[in-house]
Length: 193
Image (tube, rainbow, N blue to C red):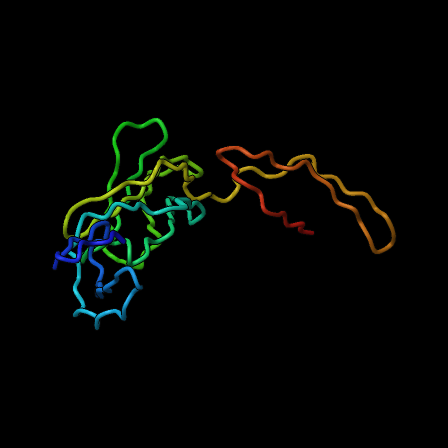
């Protein structure tokens, strides 16, 4: 900290965080050395301010058909800057111009699920998540791309064939289903007989 002239009896402390409790001590020094610190002052909380730190790790995906699942890393309490803290979630289909906005009024929240029957499976959305408190709206994250939930595969595997290997074994093969917007990611197959 800055050294203050010996005839001065007050100082302004700067660069403190908003909405944080602080206590202060004063230490006297001269050419011989530094004395013992004063007893701590009473706790004093700085005033609240609009939050300036946006959530990080914006992602999501998965979920059920007709759902858009959005997740983020919550903002720590020391960076919330005031009471009434929450999240603003904004999203739109990729290429659209209008944002849909939702408010998540929970400090601990790290997920938002938007349900709408008009959402097509694996539709890409532009997503950003911001913060607010009683002082106002703060910073928004950068845009991330998140895909809506998948639907069950709509196409059956083709080219199924079977080859007898032994008296107790048959090898079954098929052509895999290629990934596309309508089939999604095929995680596995069932062989029925």
